[in-house]
Every structure is written in C-alpha cells, then in structure tokens.
Length: 264
Length: 314
Picture (tube, rainbow over the protein chains, first blue to last red):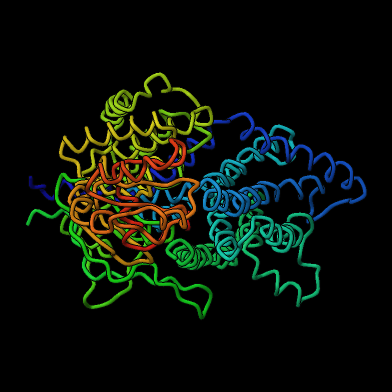
C-alpha cells in the first residue's frame, strides 16, 4: 500500500482558522436566546440607571447630554467585557475542564490555528456586542443617526481582538479558575472606569493621563468618539496604530505562553 | 520497509518546577507494522500515554542526536499537521462538546479536516451506523452513556478515514458488553487495513487485540513481542491461585519444585506449572472457595517480569 502526497495535505491556514471560528460560532449560537439576549439588555439597564438617574445631575459633557456621552462609549465597553470573559473563563474551561483543546489538537490544527482562530472569534463577539448596543442606542434615540455609526461594530471587532490576547496572556498564568477574578477586577474594571467612557479623562491630572494612554481601550474610544462626532484629527492615526501594534504583540506573546502551558 | 511507525531511542523528560526532572519515557525503541495492532501495557505512570502523544505531535520528545520518530515518513516535530491529518486519536478522556448534539460534534470535526459538507454528512451517517449510534444522531451529548460517548469519540477519530488510529485506554471504565463491542469494531477496522496503536492496563484486552505489545514500567521497555509468543516463551501455561491460604501451609504440602514454580511475590500464594494435573493435585487439598485454577495471562507475565502486581499503581 502506498500513499500519494495528496493524502497528507492538511487544509490551508485560512480553512483551519475558519474551522476553529466555526466551532465557536456553532457552540455559541446553539443557545441563541440565552447567549444573544444579554447584549441587548445590559445597555438598557445601564443607560436607565446611569444616564437617566445620574445624568439628571450633570448638565453637559463635551457639549452633549450626559446620556449621549455615556451611550457612545458603551458599545466598546460591552465588546471589551465579552472578549475578556470569553478568553479568560471561556478559555480556561475549554483548557482545563472540558478538554476541548486536547481534542482539537488531535486534528490537523496547530496551537497558532487554535488561538488565532479564538482571537478572531472574540473579535466577532466584540463586533456583535457593540452592534447590539448600537441598535439599542439608535432605537432609544440616545445618539443621532449618521452614516459613520455603522463603523462602530468594526471598532468593536478591534476591541475584541485587542482584549482577547491580553486575557489569554493572563489566563496562561492561572492555575485555578477563581484567580481570573483578579484580572477582571484588577484590570478590566479600571479600564472601563478610566477610558473616557463614563467621564472625559482630559480633566484628570497629567500623570494619570499618561498611565491611561497605555490602556488599550482608551484608543478605541477615541476612534469611536471621532466617528460619532465626525470630527477627525491626526491624533487618530496614533490611536489606530496603537490598536494594531498592541494586538500583534499581545497575540504573539499569548501564543508563546499558551504553547508553553499546553506542551508540557 | 513495511513499518508505518519507527521509534528509536526516544526519551521524554518533564520539568517539575524549576529544579526537579522526571524521566517519563526512557530510551524507547520499537517498530509498528502496517495494518497491525500494537499495544502499550503497563501500570499508570509507565509512560504509555506520553509515548503516544509524542507520536501524534501533542508532546515533543527530548532533542538528542540518536533519537528519532518516523510516522508515515514524517517527523512529528517537523510535520505535525501531516501526521495528524492522516491519524485519528481517541484520547483518554472523552472531550466532546457537551453543548451541541451528536451530529454537530462530528460536523465540527469534519471542518477541521477540510471535508466538504456533503461528503462529511455521508461519512457521518456511515460512522454512526458502524458505531451503532444512528438513533442518537440528534441527541445531546450530555444524554449519552459512557459507552456511547466512547463510541462517538471513536467515530470522530475515524471521520477522515485515517491510516492510523491511536487509542488511549479505549475501554477503561466501560461495562463488559461495551468492551466486547469496541473490540469487535477495532478488529473490523484492522481487517480493513487500519493500523492501530493502543494503551491499556487490561491484559485481556491486549491479548484479544494486539499483534505485538510492549510491556513498559517506569518509562522503560521490559519486554516486546506477540502476546501469545511472549506468554508461551516466558510463562507456564497454568496457575493455581490459593485464596485465603496462609503461605506456611504450603510448606506442609509436598510440592514438586521441578514441575511447579512457587512465586514469592504474592500474598496469597500462586503456583505455576505447565502440568495441569500436578496443580490439580495440589488444589485437591483445598476447598473449592479457597483456590482458583486457570490459564496464565499477560497479567501473570507482567507480575513475573516486574516482581509486582499491576494494582499497586492503579
């Protein structure tokens, strides 16, 4: 019996990444109601509480009503949270409890395929979550309708692919699932507070602003506020570059870390 | 020529913490024939799973000049995807996606192998039929019994018609009926030309399925060969197990040590011989419930070779 070379031709990189993405998509959409409902519900609750309640005490922020100011930021915080949870708790469960990766790695997929596919999936979820929030914002007339807002899910995708590898890096050090709370409470929640979503960071002391400049989320928020106000400046090039470079470096480190953990 | 897998002088060291090291596989060499069934036997921690994982690229062997692994002509450290593309693996733990149903579990894996939807559906139906799971096509994985899950994982490993099937303890924890069903399936597959690699602690499983086996202990090969030949060349044919009998009683009996071998490892004592009647005579000194006269098996061989019972590790 002899085999020709065609018998050993695994699928191409694109097909492999797509197959990983498809796996996550299938499992996520299996429970479409329980998985698809929260992204629409959360912003409603948040806008009602913070926007209507707290907003009554605040006249204007950045020349707009507080509810509008807050609303513009919410698609991205939503994208950040979903990517962060997906690539901490979600990944940890697949890694340690359901042994999903052990199974997938028996098929012709490499560790890179698995985790680049997963990061792209987290980006997709980020896009979907920001889209859901956008629908709520437009339906409740929180932000004005304009052509440029259709790009908000694109920034949601960028937020997803930035936070997925960051979360994976943290996850790779963790031995018990409860330790993941440190990441959410210690890094993600502060990022939500200090990235120009709830209040403008420009009035904070300079040294705090320098620290905030290191946060990934603030750059995505800058891009999004520019889109919503149609007010573009050259600074946005730096914001976009930051997002791209951050994603590439974090992805590289996360895969190295996870390889080390999986291959031992 | 003719070998599907060649393994030479392979070692695997695990680092435990920063200072401690553990040698899981120690200088292992063996060949696997095409369309044969090859078994790794030994207690937990013998290095069986580690050796198999190095074959399908899940773990990397220690890098040493003399060490090599060749699977279908490829090195698992250089061409992992090619090897995985032509192999199917049934891991020790069932790692099915619990949230989705039986059919979807298989469909997702068909994508990993780059199969087209139509081919995949046809193949899935064939395999569900072969594994006697057709009625469970739309069932949730959560609702399956342990034996069904195991068969589903086997179906998943066979989706892309691999040349090599790797099974890590295929029947551990399953009831005797399911074990026999799985053995039958594996024999059918071997008949069709599939090469099978498996680990097991069950000596009867190895005896039933394997053309060749390696008995391992602490990462080392103890003995290699066909189970039937190994038994014939290394073991007496019969064994008398004396249950609930004090070893001191044996001293009072007149046992012919030229025909019967007494084994000192055991508590209670075991007597081995090729002469059935000689053992029968000894057995007649005891009540029915106090002895068990039977053919020897690989477990007895393992015991003879390592001086210990398999169960000490389990």
